[in-house]
Each structure stands twice: as C-alpha cells, then as structure tokens.
View 1 (cartoon, rainbow, N blue to C red):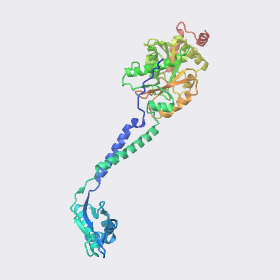
View 2 (cartoon, rainbow, N blue to C red):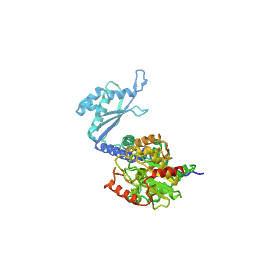
View 3 (cartoon, one colour):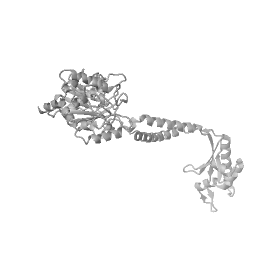
View 4 (tube, helix red, strand yellow):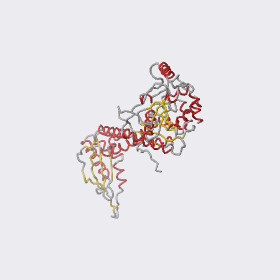
Length: 460
C-alpha cells in the first residue's frame, strides 16, 4: 500500500523567516556608511617624484642607493623641520600630511602631501621635496637627488564609494544575521515545518495555509481543503489495522492555535472519505464547535457524563453526510472534572459507531486534556507561529508523551487571527442550560441512567 503524505512546504529557515530583518539591516548599514562618507571633508593630494642616483666612491665604483634609507631621510626630523618652516606650520602638523613611497624596482621617491585645499597640498609636496633634495645634495660633490616630476595643483580625491559600499554590505549581512538570530531566540517562535519537526521530534502531517479574511471556516478554499484531505488520509492509514474505529484527539499547546477549525475540517475530511465520524467538543470552557456548526451547545458532553441526557439525544447531525456532533454542554463552573471511568465508557461507545475526533482543551491550560489523551488512540498537536510557540510545543509534547495516546504528529496551522475566547460563554449560561435540560427531560425517550445504558452497550 502506498501511504499518502501531506505536502511539506519549505520555509522555516532562519534567514528565510527573517529575511526582511536581514535586508533592512543591510540597507540601513549601507545607507549609514555612505552618508557618513559623504559628510567627510574632501582632501587634496599632490605628488612630486625624485630620482636618487648612485654615489661614486674614490675608486670610481658606484654605490647604489638604499631606498628604504632614502625614504627615512625624507621623513627625518631635519627635513620635516625645514619643510614646516617653509610652509609656515609646526613639525607635527606638517608631518601628518606627508606620505613617501618607492615604486617597485626603481630608485625613485614619490613624495606626496595631503591637505584640505589644493594649494596647501602642492605647497607641502614642494616643501618636502625641496628640503630633501637640498639635504641630500648638501655634502655630495655630484647631484645625488634630482626632481624628475614637480608637484602640481591636484584635484579633490573623491570618496571610494564602491569600496565603502562593499564593506558596508558585508558588515550589514553579518549584523543582519546576528540580529535575526537574537530576534528569533527572543521571540521563541516556531518558524515553520522544519522547525516544528526539530522541536517536537514528530512528523508534520499537514501544513494549513492562511485563509482569506471573511472566508467560511466550513467551506475553505481548495488549497486548505486539500491539506485536510491529506491529513485525513494519513489518519486513516494509521488506523487501518485497528479492529474498531479509533478516537483521535486534536489539541494544541495553548488556546488560539486554531484547534477548533482543525478538528472540524479533519472530521469533515474523514466523513468525505466515506467514514462515519463523531466530532466531540470537549473544550467545555471554550465551546466553539457548536457555534461553528450552528447547533445548540446543550445538551452535550457534560449532560451525558452527568447522566441527565442520553447520548442519542445529545448527538447533532450536521450538513456533512456521515458526520455527527456532540456539543460541549453547559459548564457548571470554572473547573470541569470528568469522571474518568464514565469518560472512557463514552469514548468506547462512540468509537464503536465511527471514528471519533475530539477537540480537546489546550495541553498547557487544562488538565482535562491529559485525562482525554489517556483514553484515545491517536493525538494530533496543532502548532502555530506565535511568540513563545517553540517552548510551548516542546512542553506539550513532553506532557502528551507521558499519556497512553500515540502522538501521530503535528499540524502546522496559520490561523487568520489569534482567537480570544472568553472562559465562560456570554449571558446566563446556567439558566439557559437549565431551560434546555428541562426541555430534554420533558421529551420522550430521555433516560437519566445513561451510564447504565453505556455499560450495557459495552458489555454487548
């Protein structure tokens, strides 16, 4: 049998996720460097060239000049003092603009002088050139040093924009990558499918793209339906060897990850594959599935477990053939406690009628999730990409790993917005529950001893 796998979108890499931050850092670095370069004062450099001839010994043999020594003589204090006096400044200031180089394999000194104006640059180059030539020829019978190129009035040296821009580009890239790494660690955010696999150690069963604003959650675009179709196919393949239908838990580390939509679309996709599916809204404090399918929240799971309503009475049909919904029921207080034995009996009975998809409360926010996970066959963890999602996902996997449920994998969801669901439904919930319950009790066929019925059904 060929196993169907969900498409695994790329992405999730550090640079790809924070490419905007890297590019912004590079742009700011380059712009700042070029602006700083443009603010620099323009400088002028004038250069004169002097050739140094060999000296003759008494025997007539020439002595080749040592150009390193000759360059040191240009920079010596005697020459600098005389040149400073010629241009009317002190020795230290005069020496700051001096630069002496020796072209390779020549007996030539290139005496350059840099100043803020063209005339000062030429004057400085001439001063050092003349003083060196006079100093060098003073004790020689022949002219050892001769000027071969006079200093000229220079043009302004333009800033080296290509060099500075290139260096700024490299520096910006390094800073951008460092900023992206720091930002990623600060936000503690899952970046995508690859990051989810690395953090959780679980396969990614599906990656759900973001839905357009205003789209119907029960009739999403084709690309979203396709993602849930792949998810349903994989869940079906994981349960083919079971002797009975299984119960699948859909949960998330924290609320707002889109668990309601994932559970609903998974149940719909399984029903479209021809399976009988029961969708259970077990997030009693934040029941969203009944509102999503347009059915009453009571009677529901809590009434069935309390024995005040039969399971048949609490199950709702939906617009999808083969899919029934068990609503959450009324929440009697801030904390909901399930009788574990009754819960196990109920899940066993439901799984005898079809695949059970349970929308559970968040792992890190409600202890009921662990109780549910101990009584199902498979668990699917819904992750998103909010700040803090990385550490939350790792903690949720650790908790679920200690339960009896098999962690099938993760669904990477991209919800349209972060859900802000209140802890208690609006209005007088208790009063509405009592009214609905009274109507159910007055209807024929409602027996309060539902747990006895469940036990008898299991025994059969």
